[in-house]
Length: 82
Image (tube, rainbow, N blue to C red; front, side, top):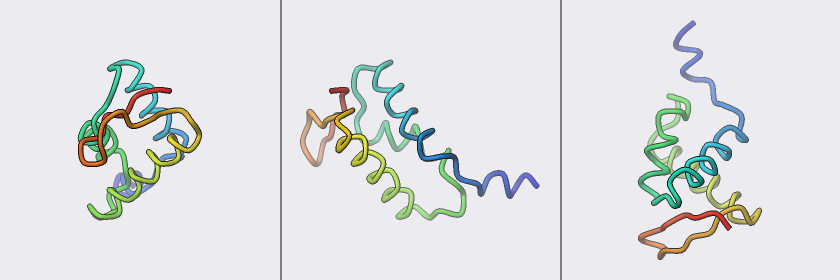
């Protein structure tokens, strides 16, 4: 039973909220910070590449919705609230 719990993904809104709350608390987050925040919360069945893509998609969604923006560069992102 425990294994099935670790393999279950959270609702997408949970991940989005985590990122926004963390940025509020810290002022900004680098991509490595976002990876650290979300990595262990993503389901275990996802490989590294899938987790990177999922996190990219979550950041892109928040950016498209106008909630966050990248104040750094593409290679050295710094995510802040808008």
